[in-house]
Image (cartoon, rainbow, N blue to C red; front, side):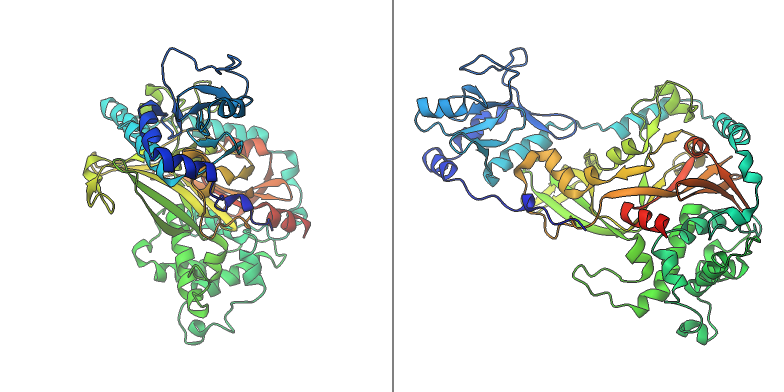
Amino acid sequence: MATRNSFFANPKPCEHLADYKLRHGLSGYKSIQKWLKANPYGNTSIKMCETKIPRCLFCSGYHQGRLFLCLICSSVSCSDHTLLHTQSEYGHDIAVDIERSELYCCLCSDQVYDPDFDKFVVSKTFMDMPSKTHDSVIDDLMRRSSKRRRLNSVVDLDLKRSKLLVSMRDRRAKSCYPLGLRGLNNLGSTCFMNSVLQALLHAPSFWNYFLSERHGPETCKKRSSDQLCLACDFGVICSAVYSGNRTPYSPAQFLYSWWHHSANLASYEQQDAHEFFISVLDGIHEREGKDWNSNKDDGGCQCIAHRVFSGMLRSDVTCTACGFTSTTYDPCVDISLNMDTTNFSSVDVASKSVRPNEDTGRSTLLACLDLFTRPERLGSDQKLYCQNCQERRDSMKQMSIKRLPLVLSLHIKRFEHSSLRRSSRKIDWFLQFPFSLDMTPYLSPSIVRNRFGNRIFGFESDESDISSEFEVFAVVTHSGMLDSGHYVTYLRLQDQWYKCDDAWITEVDERIVRAAQCYMIFYVQKMLYCKANED
């Protein structure tokens, strides 16, 4: 476990800043507000002149370290000469970092914090944000596109490559595979169920719980009264899969229990794997949650489903007029990501199909996460009530992750539904994802500080004792059309990939996994992944 970082504590007040405000008030802050410029990502800098590059008054340098603007005389000094400036000009102690728009004390030679200064910077930041976001540009392109095509060339390519890349060692006896690898029979368009079950059956801390008989038919009150229990039936599958028997298993009882839990989805038709995943965790929570106290400091549920998969999202909505920010927190068991299209041409946006080998651009998981945590301006029809202005105002919204789960489930939005066009289709873009993932840049402390600099401090109950390094262990893929596709899961066990295609288990090369159309990606904290491989 990592220790908490003392950097996140509030800084001590600077006596020189207090003296400056006593003599000059907020006049200096107001005078430089017109020079504050925000880029599309919310970072603010000072630009006094578009054509003239600022230089140090003493050495005429502009590339040697950081540059600072004096709040009294507006002269510029580099980091080596700020002290010389305040010594030569009495009382010129406070300056502003030109690149970061952060207050700096020349006598203390350190950044200082003032919430009054933040109000000017944050307000200017949101007023300078573009009104038309990247997503709205894509919508315009989609509306201007007269053709709507679904190209399945990527699917065909994946199938051909799979046949060529599958190693001959896949033909060896299945008894050589790691314990827990067992095929699941298709019970009639149930590949959506089998693919998600394979991921759940190999999620560390989740399958261990059921194998340790923490929940079973003997102790379940629901089962003792002849009622169906989804958690009990999942435990039965766990015992069967880890029994050492390699014969494909039929999860018929589990399917029957799930039908009773989700009556609206009870049919032999193909269902959505992501929807099934959420439904299963909800069913296990419904039973397990009654046996656990929802206490703890954050009031979170302590059932096994939430202890393993549940995280916390943070949403910051900021008034563009005054800079007042309203923050809310929402629990989640997965994160749904839109695919980033920054590197795609307008043709690609319209057709939504890009071959993995083309150089026209590719979407990456990191770009999707950047898009998820990117600030967006809410539309005029989404004006929110500002507590400070006491009226509805235009606002900016930004998402971040307050708390990471043990197992991180990322859902890629490949199925698009339009109520206006009354149509649905699948997005066939290629997505590149890393096997090792560091989630630090997407945590709330990182997002807020990257946006406004280091001026915002003090995050209540920072989750810095939870590791942010993850390793992928399961990838659920979808191939084919929207209404007639097929789900397959790739499992990573002891750094070897295995393809779980219903009843068939084969050993595959990692290139096949990278070329597949991932729909759900499951990561586990690196510490748990290493421990599972040791066991």
